[in-house]
Length: 234
Image 1 (cartoon, helix red, strand yellow):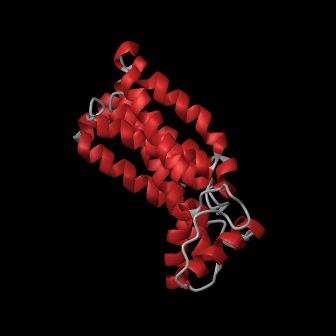
Image 2 (cartoon, helix red, strand yellow; image 1 turned 60 degrees about the horizontal axis):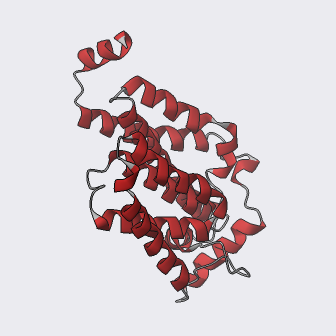
Image 3 (cartoon, one colour; image 1 turned 180 degrees about the vertical axis):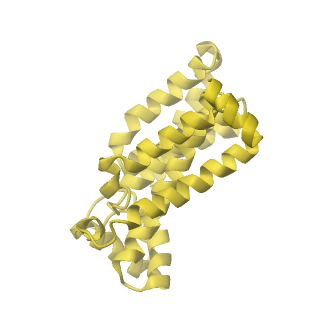
């Protein structure tokens, strides 16, 4: 605690400045650390990634693929869009697939770090430590750049749900819970493995923040109804 106060006093950082610095660190350190391994097999494409790359090429040709080819699940549009842009910029290269996915993972990292910053009462040191752990975690070395047709989409939207539930000032608004429902539906369609923990967060985080469950029943119902409608339309 004293270290945190000393750093804040020495640097005279406002909360807004801390958030800006944390975002800049997330992006810079992620890119630097990953590209140290550019010449290794971390940057090789596997078969599934090649399929998502092909979907990006098809999108540039005028098609609009929603799901991973050959499946009725694995909502992939959110990954295919930046990959199509990557192909238009870098051609049919590994970088055109890997870099957009890394930026999606980086967006998830930013949301999780900002959530940590809020939960720890603007503790810059703790937020930075969480960031460094996530960036250097061996599992994420490979999976932070994998275009697997929905995996990073589910991670990004799950991180967004948690961030909104913790940080947003609009939790009393109906449109907020409608948005949560839309995100839940897309998470389920993209990668169902992320859905249970995200749904549990939707239930528990408002209660932990002091909202009585009886005041949440209608909000939860609205989120689930909206999510069901989106799921049926996909």
